[in-house]
Amino acid sequence: MDKKISKIYSGLNGEITIPSDKSISHRAIIFSCLAEGTSVIKNFSNGKDPLTSLDICKKLGANIEFRDNLYITSTGKLTPSENTLYCGNSGTTMRLMTGILAGQNFNSILTGDESLSARPMKRIITPLSLMGAKIISNNEKAPLKIYGQNLNGIDYKSPIASAQVKSSVLLAGLFAQNKTTFTEPHISRNHTELMLKYMGADIATSGLSTSIFKSELIPQTFEIPGDISSAAYYITAALLIPKSKIILKNVGLNPTRTGILDVVQKMGGNIIILDKRNISGEDVGDIQISYSNLNGCTIEGEIIPRLIDEIPAIAVLATQAEGTTIIKDAQDLRNKESDRIKAIANELKKLQADIQETPDGLIIHGKKELEGGIEVDSHNDHRIAMSLYVAGLICKKEINIKNFEWVNISLPEFENLFDSLIL
Ligand code: S3P
Image (cartoon, rainbow, N blue to C red; front, side):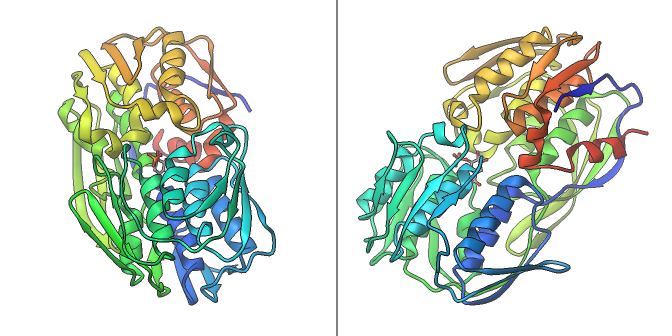
């Protein structure tokens, strides 16, 4: 589906509630399958990726009913009705499920779409194999044939800061003999640790290391906050469009995810957090954002995992900031649903932005008016599609975004929410 988008002059105004967090939705549904009894999930995501996890949970024997909320009833033991499980576009589904399936008493195969089948799986195969897992891959990529084994805990120092790798190993640790410890070079999102703790697992974090022992999970009620990675597009649009002032309600503010707020503040963006609270173990709040004059900045090191998914949106922002923005240490962005460094640099260049790829990031010189009047490509990647839409709102001439339907991977409500902010 193509999407035509043109400049808006009125500014964005009003309030919206940000839809459910994708990362937390995956974990809530998957972990509920591992707990004996009935778990309740309030505000589960409508995105295609979390629905892929939900579908797999059904195939693994969980009874899932949707009434006002999601009700997941499980025996706590996985009982597959099918052994080949399709993970679609979702890296989180595949990597978390591999950790769980590695320690079961049955065999399974995880498959994915074209993008997921091209993404690196060595990062999970290496530590899981050290635990005793038997995983046969296609050149370290999906499909993954997982032969269930008895696992042993390990003390693993990860070369990359990846929440998916960390979660995969910790979930394998839930079924392993002895202690499993995972140490990461920088802190990545910690939803797995918080949720497993909330469900009674024997898990503890100290600095960059988390340890877990074999545990039984207790069913819980989960209330999923809004996704700060979805909020990022409304934040950047409001900062860029003159006369804008918006409030985003119910946004997850877990400190391992709020790198974008730190960067916006560093760039001089007018952003205020209102009514901060804690729900089901996660920080939540409302965010007020107004149009701002921005300055470029350098983004590197430990902050990268705290804003990894927001970099394409930050790149759009940087095209309109005075001076130079340098993004470094983000090489893993090349391993996402698309090569996001290349994708965003190429597409923004088509709009006449002054942006240059580096091996591990981007260099963007602002402030440069975006021209438009041409077609850009989503690269079949939801975050590239949504970032280009924000760029389209400030381009001089209309743009056409090819394959825009990929937004449904995380945020089917994306456009309706934008429309409700345009008076
Ligand atoms: C995710 C972790 C991140 C992120 C992805 C979701 C998660 O990936 O980019 O969108 O839910 O754990 P990595 O763990 O590969 O950095």
